[in-house]
Length: 119
Ligand code: FES
Image: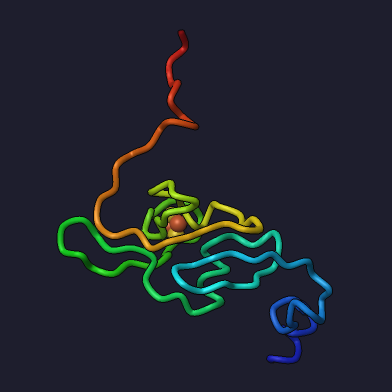
């Protein structure tokens, strides 16, 4: 069974070096991680055993990605100083700085989504 799956999906069982994939370096908390280009932040952090991505505003409960498709918002992290980024929908970029998000964060609309109206 394992052999059949490995044959059908070789990327699941092959290291980045074996695939010749380009890699980028990202910073997570105090760690520098080398991850495959084209990976989401959530996948990259999970692959490196990052643990919880955020804590909840009320009880400071630890949270980590759940749906991996932009629905649950359990994967919120701070990316390059901007809070509440969905790690499962954000692609890694060389030099990206990622931090855990603790509790509630202010919503920053300075560079995107500031204009929602038709006028
Ligand atoms: S893991 Fe659910 S929104 Fe990102």
